[in-house]
Amino acid sequence: MAGIGGIQGQLPVFDGKLFDDWRIKMQAIFGFQDVSEVIEDGLPDLSERATKEEKRSYKLQVKLDSKARFLLYQCVSPKIFNKISKASTAKEVWDILVKMYGDGDKNKKVKLQALRRQFEILIMDEGETVAEYFDKVQELVNKMRACKDTISDEYIVDKILIVMHQSRYVLDLLKRFEMVDCNAANTPAELGLRLEKEPNEEAVDPTAYRSIVGSLRYLCNTRPDLSYSVGVVSRYMECPRLSHLNAVKRILRYLQGTHSYGILLGRGETGEEVQITSYSDADWCGDKEDRKSTAGYIFFMGGTPISWSSRKEPVVALSSCEAEYIAACEATCQATWLGFLLEGLKIELTGRVRLLVDNKSAIDLAKHPASHGRSKHIETRFHYIREQVSSGRLDVVHCRSEDQLADILTKALKSERFQSLRKQIGMVRAEISEDRTRRTAKT
Image (cartoon, rainbow, N blue to C red; front, top):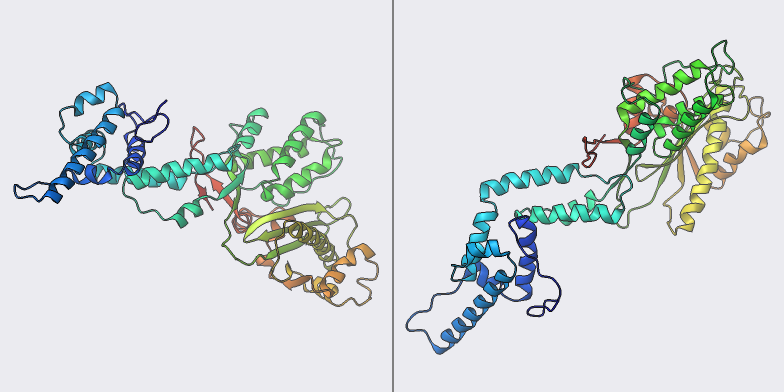
């Protein structure tokens, strides 16, 4: 289509709907055509004693006014044109449209409050690209600014945060395994959970059991709070019994109440130092059948969890010190891998990786490689942590048991402790309405 006044393509036509969107587009066109001033201020008064220069200037303003009215006439439907056709100036035309379809100060304030609320609860949908999410944010910002809101660019950037979650996957999972109407549980594992490999119980369908557990394992990619409980039920895939299935259903009940939880990925500041902090912990002799301990670790970069694990240690530890030492070594291996990964991404770490352990004996064992009764039997591969500490690549630091965040990855906890750790490791809730289109992140 041929353009008008240098404007190529289709002009926006107002038909009585979406006035704010149309107004934003028209303001851009007015600026391009240099008619914004005549639309906002109208034609100046011309006195009888006007000079030639003033008359020449007035004639130019009249020409611009005619140009502006012509633009407006082209950008409204015939129905809207009938309402503005009697106006004699472009300012009158614009004022009529704003009065009829725009918002007064009071209505504009109410609308702005609604837009701000919508902006606050907006969160990226599952399966939505970053570009699509950004477009939604920008659309809301334009509407807010049309209502004279002075939202800052920094605030907009802060909004472009991603909550990594699998809420839709969880809802489909609950529906598929007929747990949509179940009662929600506060934790994924019952306190003091002790499962046996072959109890004297009724066997359950192994195919269905494996299907549920496999689906839950995929969910652990964004849910570190599930890692321990899913790891426990994964040990009984070969011949699952009724108690094992009940433990799985407990996890599904927990998901019923937390299906919208995920990890908030924050935005780092330009030039901000990149540091990695990790926690490792172990539940000594957590498995009462083979007496092996459960080890767990979690890594943070910029306050965001980036890597975590919960698994049974490969050997039987003779003491809690040894169990913690093995868990710390596994975390050290992961720290080395993360270092290589960041190096490949051209991201330079500031300082050494910090590993927080709540067992002083294990820390002494890592820092002072003396051979004595409590360490001489430990396999050589678990002494890798000593090399990393002595070379200055790893800093092993003591922390209180109350501050040990990896505790959530090693054992079943009381509800209060579990929820406190869940919050501290960066899990947030993306509230989902019935249409699943509006979400808000809450800790």
